[in-house]
Length: 442
Image (cartoon, one colour):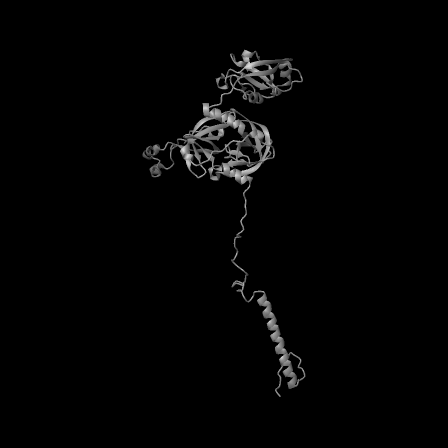
């Protein structure tokens, strides 16, 4: 009988008979075959024997097999639809001004770079060769008629220009010319050859008087210049009829009865459209508040000129190149700006009258003088509109045309008076007058 060898670290078992070993071997073989069969069925059922191993050479499962999902998301919305309707009509407006005449710093090598007199004369065929980009803003094509396409923008975008260009949505630069400007409402109209904008659908104006606070609004334009042309930002109408008053670079008053929005408006957006969800232009973006007088930083307070006011102004600019507004022929100061001593010794209105516009001086042969108004009269109403400041007086007066008659309510010391004034004079005809405390005249 063969001797069974065992490892030294295992306790030896008693020897078994040959019959026992035979039976044990058969049982062992049956168990092994059963186990193999069971494991094989399990792997086949799970597909493990039908597909290649996911284990890579690097040991990381599915390494390098990441893919983009084939699922498509429909992202169309009111904002995307509205932007699409007007986006092609939005342009960048480039203000060109004459270069400063300075000597080249290139010395004897200037001719290499085209700065010699010969190269200057050869480049003079380009009409804007002596002009350089001074600033950029935005605008929108609102009408294509015959050979002309009209663009509205802000007056401060084109201020002091010596030449103008517009950058279309497709990147084409087109020469533009100025039709007219209105500093008071900060609006301007440009025109380009209609062939240059062939295929572009002009934007349409919506009714700004129907706007509601809280409704969505989007702003389009070129924030920070044409590098970001045709940018779209969205927000809501935050408020209506905001009185925004400031001065332009020439010291002229800008007075806008503005739409307030929190759609992002940045430098370069000026002149671009504020659009409703129907894709209609309801305002022309004009300004924003960045910081208060007390140095508090501000976000989300932008202003746009209402479309109804825009249409009124651009129709006049197209026709006359300017807006003709009526004038009274007075210089004025706010009643609230006077001292207690001035009120009691000079103006002498009732103590209940705390707001109004004081007539500081009157030019001869003007509507005010012909109606009998005098120095120190305090105007409190134009027709049925209360006026508490010179800006409000201008705003109420400018709703009328030359030739209209208005009713003016005023106090002459303690006596309340009413007079009808025929507006026979336009503001451009006013003679220069002595500057008052505020420098306002009308």
